[in-house]
Amino acid sequence: MSGDRPAADGPHGDAAVGNGGTGTGERLDHLLVVSVEQAVAAPLCTRLLADAGARVIKVERPEGDFARRYDRYVDGESANFVWLNRGKESIALDLRDPGDRALLRRMLRRADVFVQNLAPGAIRRLGLAPETLLAANPRLVICHISGYGEEGPRARRKAYDLLVQAESGIAWVTGLDDRPTRVGVSVCDIAAGLNAYAGILHALLLRERTGRGRLVETSLFHAVGEWMNVPFLIHRHAGLSPPRPGLHHPSIAPYGAYRCRCGREILIAVQNEREWARFCREILGRPELADDPRFHDNPARVAHRRELDGLIAEVFARIDRKTLAARLEEAAIAHGFLSTLEDLDRHPQNRYETVTGEGGGTITLLGRGYRLGGEPPARGRVPRLDEHGAAIRAEFAEDRTGEADP
Image (tube, rainbow, N blue to C red; front, side, top):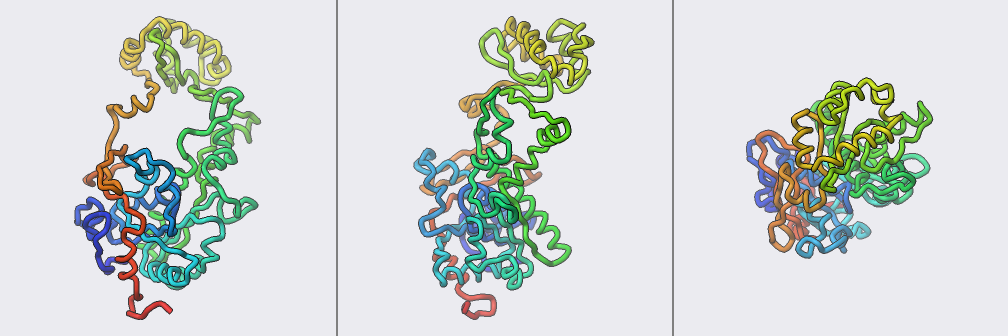
């Protein structure tokens, strides 16, 4: 791989062990990742690689990744940028400039992974088509992240998260009654970033066996499209469009939010007939409902949801939330609370990670969605624009033969 590249001081503090690494060889500190990236999807993918110890060089346009300027909520910095860019090195390149393009090509000849999420067709116009890059570096894993994929009538269309939420049907199945709604976070971007990360790791594993790199493709539309398979199958095979039930499940009942005597809501989820019988007996105090033809199995309960919700609401309205939660816990019925952002801020299940902002301050974030046994929490610095530009230009001024790029 690229284990013989020179170590350089970077955002990890010690490039030889990555950001917070153990130095035991268990991390991905042997990998060099070069990413021409912006916004969310590609930066999420490469931040996960950086968290795992890879050296990530973030290539930004001269004015910087536009996500740097989304907002100034986090000590004057962008919340998106802080979340997605810890542990990376930053270099600003003008890829319209022949010299900067040549520098990028030299970097890619040494790289293990190349990630890009530029506008459709841009990477080919820059002379960086996959076949060209693989001819120069056959072990390179290349990841293209697009809005709609490399083929098809939408392939050349620019895409952003809300647009793809609408096109993919996610917004159509989200909301309440006749009002489709955007999911409150950028799920299409996030789905694409996670798929890119998984695809890159898959390709790296294959490279260990074959010695060859390859192209990995994902898109916002296809990444979140896979999530739509349940409503897709229901529509295709039954001709039905699941309702928009707000804080209720469209095809399982009872599964949703109900108001308690104190005015606050509690969510419950009944997943099988054993739980349903126990819920009727121990929570509703109506054991006979378990065998009622209107409610005896899940399809029947969904068909008679309005009547079922009325029965549950009548009982829950007489019990305060704390008492009801204790009863549900005792009965082993799954339940939860609707968290505000204030509730989330102090949620007892949170895991935290810290990052050093551009200005040097410590910023606390919610932790990654997975942990690896024995690995310390991820940490790192958020790079300033072109912070590492001079060092990277010097490092890649010549190729491995000592000859300057023509």
